[in-house]
Length: 335
View 1 (cartoon, one colour):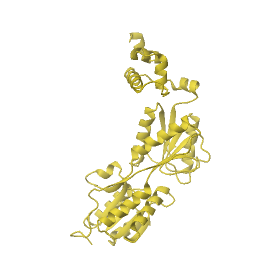
View 2 (cartoon, one colour):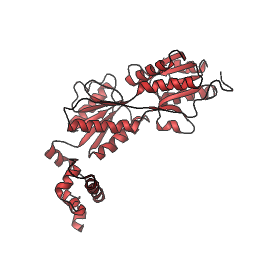
View 3 (cartoon, one colour):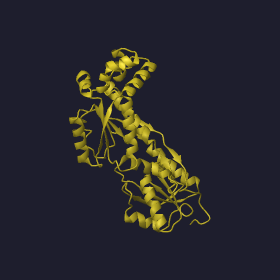
View 4 (cartoon, helix red, strand yellow):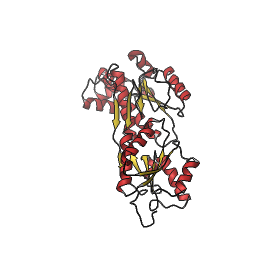
């Protein structure tokens, strides 16, 4: 490439010359039109990356009516769960040739509405979102929208199999010989928390004794009612709505001098990255967080390409991951 070309941003023509193909072929590839072979597609994309080619999104939008940008609304970028989903959304969007605008809504209805308006004014083609129970941005949505973590009437969605995950928790407790169980359920107006609890109760029916069932916020600090129940030592296993709540329960148990898992076992749900740390070693139900993000983008791109296609609600499988926080009962020092 000449010195003059190096001083400016590479164009489609530059990519075509370097790749040994026509400008039309490069355009087909970069606009994801699926008109070339996979080998040519990969070759052109590699050359474009090597040259540092950047799409002129304003010009593309004028030609195609698309901005090639999507939104991603999540309730928190501090929680260990949602950043993993968000990263997967961004990476999958890049594979499809889309940029991603990420907004932390704080889980509030008003902030979600503001996030949707902001994305709309920036001309996104659509969005994926983890929405609050009473979200107002779906009736009707300002743009094509895919729901993550729960089903919403009229929208494509992707979620983990929360009900089966709850049942797996109960089955694990029973298989280890536990019978007296404490349940830290999430707020029941949240579909995922409700489905996990329902699944656990189904698996526990006729086999496990639920000594206490406390609905707690999905936060890192437990309410006093929960800490008091844990301290009473009336259960041999505590099943938690998510890993963050489970780690909080572990903290309370250790503060009370109750050994985990020889006296009390603890199981969570999510399998966030912290859960595998040796100091935590949390037994948990793994939901495929990154896959949720990837599938959500795939659903959105399909909706953009096929606006009249049938609504699709995807449910992804979950699995039990056993670590150091659960053990058989009775144990040598158990209650």
